[in-house]
Amino acid sequence: MLVLVLVLLLVLFAFGAPYRSGEAGRYNPQGGAHGCATFL
Image 1 (cartoon, rainbow, N blue to C red):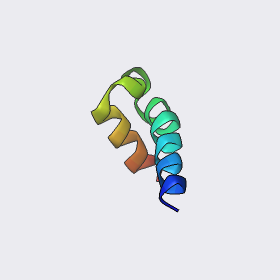
Image 2: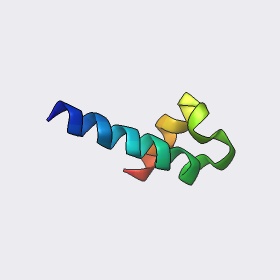
Image 3: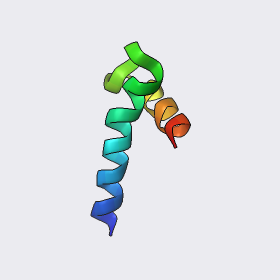
Image 4: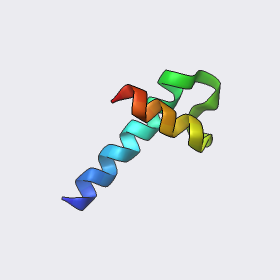
């Protein structure tokens, strides 16, 4: 169960950040968190 949650977070972080904040991408932790929050 925990592994499933971690994978889901990883996918949301990988696809959520560039989707929301473009240049911030996956290397910007703030951009990633912001993207995930808005994506969800």
